[in-house]
Length: 311
Image (spheres, rainbow, N blue to C red):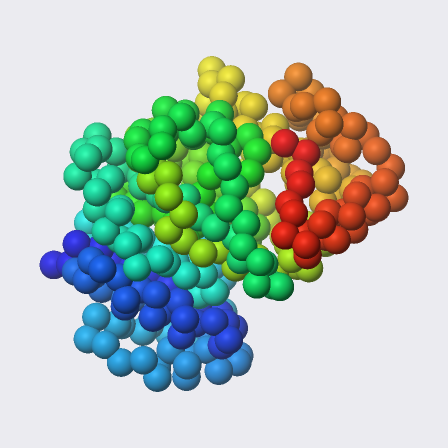
């Protein structure tokens, strides 16, 4: 049985998938299986993936497009290893990613969730690495409170995450009814229960298409996590309430930009504004034209390799 099962969900990433696959095959720690789930891609993604041959690779095809959570779940169900690592088909691992995850597993047997820091690759080839002041150790350690540490730029992305398989057996798989922020939903459920070990070294390259990421297109047609459900479930956890309000804030801004007034009002009505910074409150209450100007300015800065936020 391999030490790791690596899962790559694949949908229309023909330009990037071979790089992602090779970044797994080039790992310094080689005891893994690689499960690629082709989610009914309509471009040449499947063919590109097939061009790489390695006995550790298994490609599974969905007969119809089911979405990212379902693709991850298919991989989880097929996984043989006790530890499952995820990589999106347009991201890259540094060669020592799995090696350093194994260090975390050995050093922190009490943990069931593991991740590393990341770098952001912009479309103009510039690289950004964030300085997470919330992380109090230089090398690696336990994140004592995920929710308090993620009230600003996220300290990890899905491609940084490795999960002990028992976590899925006990709290369930990814929620397939959610098609936006499904990783947030899983993080709430898992981080509320399990300990989280973190390697403070950028071992993942996250590809950020600046135009798509910074331009807020609203949530039309998107199903997001049920923040109200989690607020009731964890009603005695002020840290989770603050995290939920931060998530409501980010989604409400998107709704304002796209003119979704009803959804905006619903999200804002549940926010305790004491959980937001003064800058965040200002942005939430600003006219949409102000948000549009700020968004365009952020895009301009991002193209120059400068990332600013309201956190």
